[in-house]
Length: 407
Ligand SMILES: *[C@@H]1O[C@H](CO)[C@@H](O)[C@H](O)[C@H]1NC(C)=O
Ligand SMILES: *[C@@H]1O[C@H](CO)[C@@H](O)[C@H](O)[C@H]1NC(C)=O
Image 1: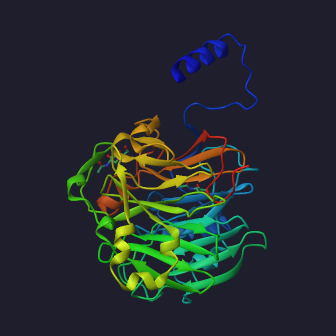
Image 2: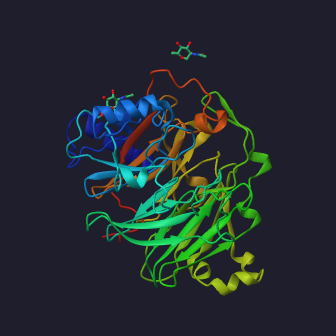
Image 3: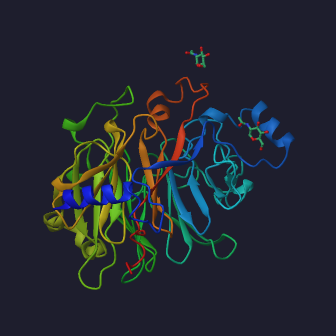
């Protein structure tokens, strides 16, 4: 039935009978791309100094996470290698032409991004961010795989009030290791108080962190479902063997519904099993002193490959990358997982689909960043080559992020 309908629509479209209100793309299309991540320097002298002192080594700068708000993309730039002067930045799509190599603007400013700034109010190493429905950006400055005197933190900036810092929370060592923590992604739940759910991809103490904004407290769940799966180890992405063992990594939150609880979905990067857990449980810190809660971890099913980031829209469709396949897959969570299907696959442009976001016009964006090249080689890969390494690709879904109620 569906096939016949599709066929009919294709014929009608080809004959020009069906007019689309929106120009819908059937596949992901490259919207922005970079060979090197570069910034709006204060002056030519500043830029030259940064180059000469190796404060800025162009090929070492990467983007790992992004979100869209109003007209701008906001980026997390992990400090995996040296020569990375900025760890949080944005650009406005309004004034951005051409779409190749747009310069990023440090957020909130250069000083806060300065590694030599002695204050721990600076941003040390940002991996991920989310922007809530009120325009408050939640920034995870909590990758501490190398020692830092500044503890891991969550910083909230109000984008509707000149990016003012509205809250800072320092994670205690028993929730996120001050030496070895790796808070990798974040989803926000503003039903019954405000909560954030955060995977800790730490090699030493992996787990799922819950942060209650109302209580200003965080707690952590540790479970075997959050470990790397040995059977899923050693996979190849674009010719490179990924042999590190990564635990829990991708996370998504189901949309707000009028009745019933929301669910958090997660998966290990070195893994193919998808799990979920109800938010009513996550919100109850006391439950985790015992072991009984583990019964509520649901094994959802097996994906066809390992993946990194994921996102859910506001009608319950989950999108996630399939790393060895250079692909993005979608699964309508109202149907069995085996009905999931690949949306697009491209071994040239979709190398390591890492992070996802929605705009408010029904578009889904994916960031393909080939981040494994930096991670696997400890920055020693031949990065001097002048090829495109980072891409933002766009796909029309007609939906919005899980943060917004469906109309
Ligand atoms: C970075 O941008 C500056 C302008 O802000 C430009 O002068 C410089 O050539 C760029 N460098 C790279 C490596 O793209
Ligand atoms: C790195 O790539 C550049 C540009 O393609 C090439 O000229 C150079 O020989 C390469 N270096 C190594 C060590 O492979």
